Length: 327
Image (cartoon, rainbow, N blue to C red):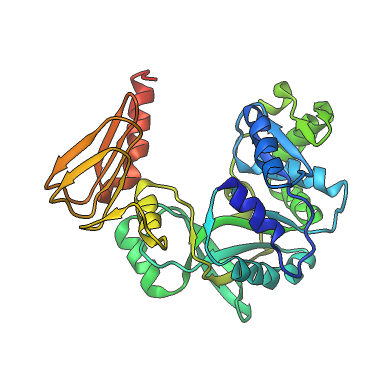
């Protein structure tokens, strides 16, 4: 998925795009270079975090580093592991936001919601500025199911995919206004950081005291110059849950892992009289009879089982494992 994202960035049509920069954990440095070199891409920067501090600090650091080259260019900040089916439409939507970004605005994409998804944040559109361009009324957190249904029915809400467009100057100005403590900590970190070729090794001692916050909380929910390109319909999926992966497998053409009964079966599976299950094994045989609407994932040393309607509750398992000091 990382390589697909990289290739999507260089397949920009008429847009002139610099080589991609990456923000990742320190231990992923070799992986980034391996994956980029396999497809003939040389990274512009690989910014290496010694510890995670969420998305706001790295956005500020990336803006400062890229601003060294072009303070009034455009940064497209986006996750590295999203699925986008229609690349041409993706770039068309990005193009709709470029002029307003160059005018000193922060721009985000509002994904057309196809289902009342409770696992995504939403953006409520404000006033229309031009076709497909709106002000942002507000960002809203992940809703419960009934609220998500009301969002879908209203037509005023869009999925927040965490895709942003801005110039280095604009985002730095926003940090100075809304999160100056994060900006200062990031600049202290950069001043103490070491560089080797494309790699930027963020200084551990200064970066560890930088406030941890998301770019949504720190900047986007407070900024008055945030604009929305919507609706964006690009076949997007963040593959953020087992239910999303189930839907992704079923939407593939061809769909080699989908069997009779609408089951997704990957690995060593024996399923009799089952309906609408996602079952994956990385080793042991998983056998079942009469199962419906379940997620079953077997690894070498653990098995996860839960009903699909509780697919987002994997995080509760993770919390319980941590609470019990389980590896």
